[in-house]
Image (cartoon, rainbow, N blue to C red; front, side):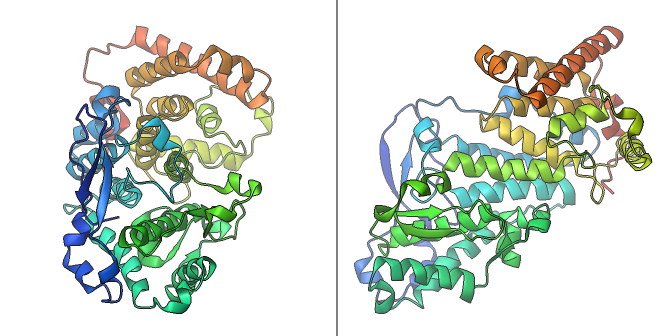
Length: 434
């Protein structure tokens, strides 16, 4: 990975593989590689592929609401828009095959840069800063981790493949002190954003896997790594991502292989869950939590709902009406919307379109909510609908979708949607997020 990944040529119709010198190799930082490594290490080259088969997604294809809504409230979103463009430029490099490629051998997408674009957009949304998050500076910090290992590189580390991989783990988790955040802190923002993990050295298993894979990628570019390596992604609450020789992999290792698509989806879904505005609900489905708040779900135990839950629901509605986007332990509408929009761009489950729609409904953006609900219904395959019919949660979700659809159509008949939509939603009342 390099501080300034080449993004050129993404729109060409050619599908050739092209070798370009890595900008990282030109950086003065990389001139300090130990002399013992440089003679045997050829100049770094980054392998780029001009994607031809996969249609490129763009924000204009979907006409997303978040940035325009904020702009209409007087909030500058130029930095957020630039970060979103950077995110799109990276995922446009993904073909269907590359989406299923392991993060340890991925070459076409700069995962570190992509993760930092996600962080940069969200940072701009909540900070209103005139200065964008320094993506390149944090990329240099990530690259410095790889460079720092070189000073500890010795012949003993290369005595065997196992010793080499073990020395990398000791360097990352012992010397550098990176650790996995505890289960109770999984929703803490700083464990979910790469720049925060690089700063505090504590993060989710996803972020640690990403950092580990980027270190291995640099070692491969430098010629230090000349065999196939896989990263074991832990599914428990305390394990650390570890690299192992792919030739010694077992069948039981397959569920622990993290692909590019899986990593990006999980990063965004973790953010979506952490900032979902309707936190105080016992239902696992985020959509049902929002549908319940919108009275789109029949609750047989509604009469037994606690006074605390009722007060929380009323308080949440009051915050939205006043334009208060976020509150401690009550999520953040802006970052939930941005996560949904990026998941839609990533072309994941059509349910992401549905979830985005109901958030737009809560924002008072009824016309766009109806638009995306229709897109969701069109995107659903008949077979998937039939296969979910026996699942009680899916049944409740589909019933809520139908109720929301009816309600939005009734609103459409009552309101004049020819008028600008942003002037009458809660965003225009108060642009301050606290």
